[in-house]
Length: 109
Image 1 (cartoon, helix red, strand yellow):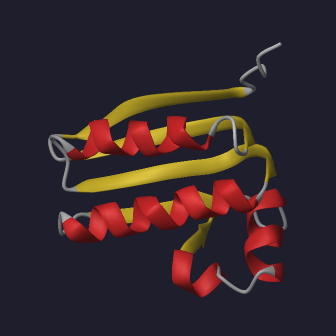
Image 2 (cartoon, rainbow, N blue to C red):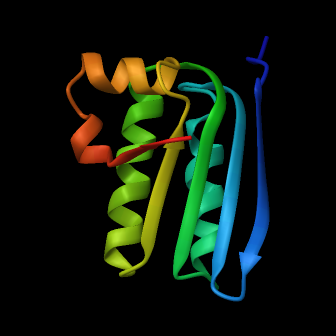
C-alpha cells in the first residue's frame, strides 16, 4: 500500500518578480519533494519567493532537510527566500530543537 500524501502546496503571484508558496499539512519523507518542486517552479520566473509554512502541522528531519535544500537552491540562483512560520508552531519548534533556526532564517508570521 502506498503512503497517502497529506500536504497541499499552492503557488500565488505576489508581483512581477515574486511568488508565495503556501504549504498546508505534513512536511515529511513522503511530501518534502513537493515543497522543493514548488520552489523549483517558482524560481523559474521569480527572484523573491516566500514559503508560507504556517499551515504545516507536522515536520520531520526530512522536511527540515528539504527546507535547507530550498535555501541552497535560492542562494544558488541569487534569489531571496523567506520562510514564514507560526511562532511556537511545529516548524519553529523542531528547527529550534535541532538548532537550525538561524541557518534556515525563519520569519514569524
